[in-house]
Length: 127
Image (cartoon, rainbow, N blue to C red; front, side, top):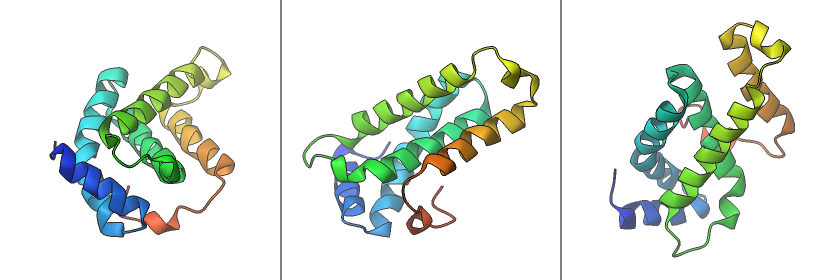
């Protein structure tokens, strides 16, 4: 993982709207977060979907970031929350009868429907 000061600096630049700040933050933190999500799911596709949801949540809440606070624990907490929400959604129900890919797509589509803002500023290659 990239050094904490570098990640903190990238987070601040991202909060100011700099695309390069986001790209540096993503490169520095995404492998760690993905490993955490893989440990929690054991499923590469689901972990990738949850990684995307984590960074979408980060994007929509970045204005709440407190300068001086470490971004890694905050981003990790967001990822753990997304993992827990996915586990709750995965409780036995009629959803279990759907193919796994359809369930995962449902996770993403449900987020898109409840999203309050555009994510185009992240760009197609950001996630």
